[in-house]
Amino acid sequence: MREVLAQAAFQLFLERGFERTTVDDIVARAGVGRRSFFRYFPSKEDAVFPDHERCLAEMTEFLAAADDGDPVGAVSDAARIVLRMYAANPEFSVQRYRLTREVPGLRTYELSVVRRYEQTLAGHLRSRFGADGDGALRAEVIAASVVAAHNNGLRLWLRSGGEGDPEVAVDHALALVREVWGRPDVPAAP
Image (cartoon, rainbow, N blue to C red; front, top):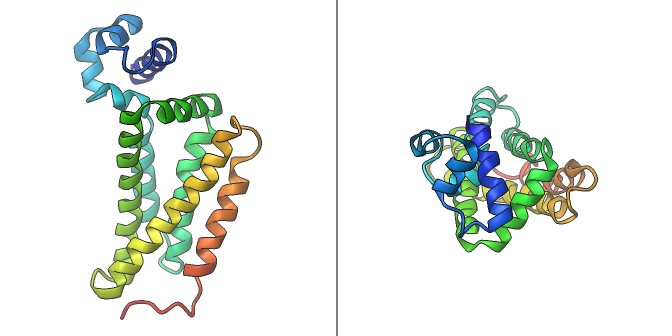
């Protein structure tokens, strides 16, 4: 049902525009009642990003099982989970990217989603570096770097219309983060 509602919502957003589409329009297209919509999505903005909750849960699970030996590598690999989510459905991902560029409220919503990923990565790093002093600072800076690198590579691919291999640009950007922050000569927090 979640998938049906998300597809109905997205079709209407593309046909009518995000602002001119109501929840009533979405449930009518999906053939369900309003309560069904709100059982799956707290808002119509959430219907644009139906896969992020699952992806965030997968990232959290991945990090919980990660090896402590390379925390920067672990958070870089965790970011690739998000990339794979986008790459699994290029057409939808490109359309969503275009829609979020056109609708200021969706850009704001997207930033809140990105921040949640960043907080998850930073939390993992704080558990490795310590939450006091430079450990917390280092965790926040590395998490922000990973997210910025990932998003730079991902957006290059999305702007291309989903052409080619999205991992190439993301891997290149994440390699830069690992080169700076993953070096053994970068002091860890005491």
